[in-house]
Length: 319
Length: 283
Image (cartoon, rainbow over all chains, first blue to last red; front, side, top):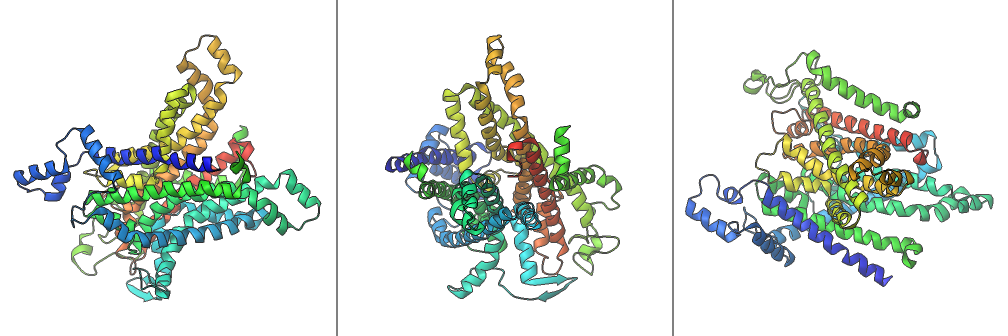
């Protein structure tokens, strides 16, 4: 088991290496002149040359690549073109908000998605099954940013031909003060961000349970006369859980991408919002740094998911 | 025509075909029968009272946007943008994915190692974020770059499916027989191995179109995709966001168009999978 853990942790190294290299290539290969972005159209040639040198942009690609990798692996993601602050500091500042949002959305989608999936599987080919499957497909197909806007329309204000009727049930923007106020602010962003995951998890839970239900040991349990609830929760669910856990891990990718849109719509001060603000201000280092942090988070989450497998499935532990 | 029968048996798949079919029809003939020009700006709206978007009415069933352009006409033209991007980007992703997947599965060894590493890296990257990373530093984000980005995102999923199938088929007797008869690598791959991948490939390609449309809408929403005045649905939602509390239609209808289109492609993909892959039927 320890050997497996170590192997799994080591396997992260080439992936992280690949991700950082990819970001370097994106920055390097795509035409675009950072110096020009920093100085605007009219910077004088002397300053331009000095900054080009400072950034190492006059060196050959291989040297730039080595400089870049050394920098990144020592935890330096550069400085913002706009504010001059360290990118790492900017991102660390925003991290808690994004974690709070992503974790809340994940909990919502796991709890509701699995419940819906189990319900659909138990009622296979009945109306409930059909309804849940179509709803989860709608959840997957709806753009996150638009869902956020629709939620705002429903919960905060309903516009009708120029005269707005404000319900004001829930706050629609900002972070709120710690405590109850924060939770109220969190509600709508978390709900809209959880929709995609809910859909995927419900679908996977359903199909995974249906597959397990055909196994012999389930038939045995049913033949023994165990009640359906016991069969589902004691025998089927545990075995059906593994593909579901995979989906939960994969779903974090959609969640992190969705967080960028959700945070923008609801003015939630997380990393996603900082990325979008920086896009609008042409602040490339912050954008690339933010993307890299999110990619690393995704890699780590998937390692955690693999470790979780071992907890669920003893067969993996033994092999 | 067994497949056709299977597909038409499933209500969901039929719903998907209807949605996708109507999208194609709208994109094809809509612009010819639409009475309004999607680019025509109503100057009165901009410079004289009453300012702002016009509410839905008989002449403008979905209302107009803040520049007085007919929203329905823009949504109809937007179906072209959406369809083009969804399908062309899928073709790119399938092209790269099939090539890489076949090479990796067929040759194995170091070729497989490198391609698998590339695939793992692509999977390690949340797709939407990779798109941001590229689009944010492209000097003029436009449709061309969207194709590139969506292709870059989509190929890995396709390659993984193809690689798996190729690995399974490579050692089948008919592949060995072809080899014994002196067939070259390319011929074996194209004639004997790839046809075995069609079923899962069609499903993956359909789902890929759905993903592309969603990602394009999302990029355009962030200002990183199609640029004004292109009637991209995602862009239209952004334009409507500022007017949302008072003129709901500007962001409601384009978003609905995105959701319905993506839903259609996803339903179609589900239906195809049920029909083409009997193993997964009822599961």
